[in-house]
Image (cartoon, rainbow, N blue to C red):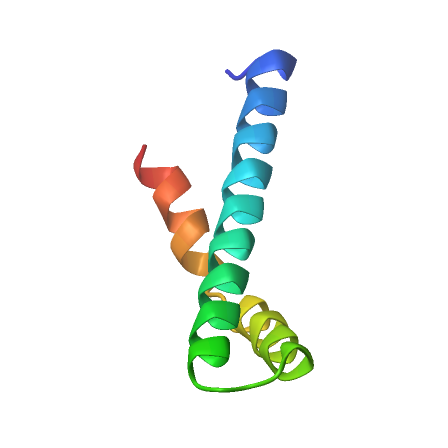
Length: 66
C-alpha cells in the first residue's frame, strides 16, 4: 500500500516529467520554426503547437514502467 508521501512524490515526479517534456517540445518547435525563417511570433505559435501535440501517453506509460 502506498503512503501519502509516496503518492505525493509520484505526483510531483509526473508533474516534473510533463513540465520538462513541454519545455523540450516548445524549445524544439521554436528552434525549428526560427531556422525555417519564421518571425518571432510565428516561431512562438509553432512552440505552442508543439506543446499541444505532445503525446502525454508516452510520459504516463513511462511512469508505469519505472
